[in-house]
Length: 175
Image 1 (cartoon, rainbow, N blue to C red):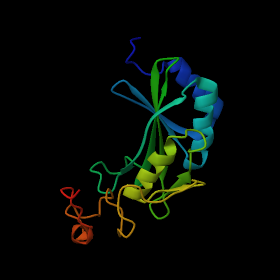
Image 2: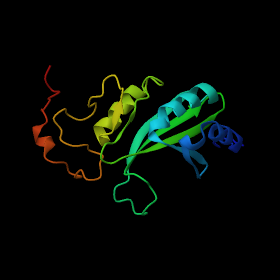
Image 3: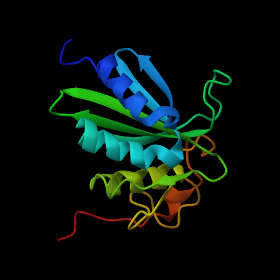
Image 4: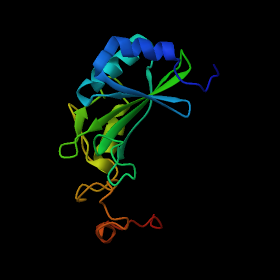
């Protein structure tokens, strides 16, 4: 196994045995392992991955909007929250994905597990409108507070809805 390979099957089997049906699927693609988890179990599984298996370095947290995805039936819900974790001690990476309901996309915050997820969850909220319940300060971080909608959702127009005309103009040539 090279340093770029992901978690070995024995580790994934241990994780799956411990959490049982709370892990809906294990997907292996191009040398990467993804645990698909139920959204209501994501917080507990991420805590276990951190505390019991050494995946204590959160690399990234993002989301996916599967609206109009070309492969029909491949994704059970429109949105997914994706956590990328790394174990520095094991030199392994692991992806955790939770699919969310389109009408009320929300999942429990992991800012209490990984401090840096505070900002990453705010970014996902701002761009996709996914709520992180229990987040200490879930407000927009990139877009103006008065922006209607969420810029990375598939229904949001590529050119925007005229927001640029309302942005304040700042001049840097003044002392």
